[in-house]
Length: 214
Image (cartoon, rainbow, N blue to C red; front, side):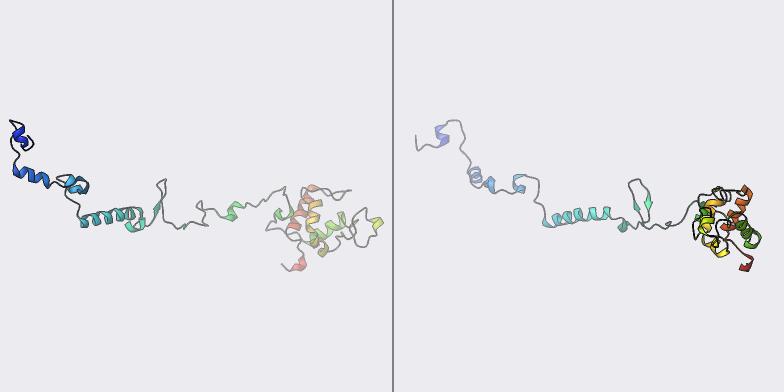
């Protein structure tokens, strides 16, 4: 029994063919088989094709993300607006207005401060024709350098208006007390509103004099 072949021991089974037995002996070890051997019909990848595929995969993102490579001169923001990258409108007012247009000059009072007080270009008021007489009538009775302290009616020493130079040096102070809508001085016998407006005009124009030659 021990010397009998499988075909002799099992009646009805054909004897294995020599070629089939040889093929079985030549079957490769599955652990050493390549992908091409394990998957019939799938050839092994060629090295050149793999390199080309890798180069193409690296090149595509670089081309798609560079707007300059496509010849476009601008960039598109998330809202879809295209910009050139250079702001050519800086400092330009697109409404057509200028600083002079927006800085409106108030030609009528009241004015908040002496620098805001408007000087009419056709003003003819002078020191000789208006400023001097106004100071004499309403100011120098107290604001005169020749008056001692006891006769100044509490006017501060050094605050004097008997000359054009003194008036010009204190024009803003005089305006804030006696010109236009300001009426705290003089305390007695004040001028009317028209005279106060004329004083404001004359001071705003620089307290001109005929001696200026203008």
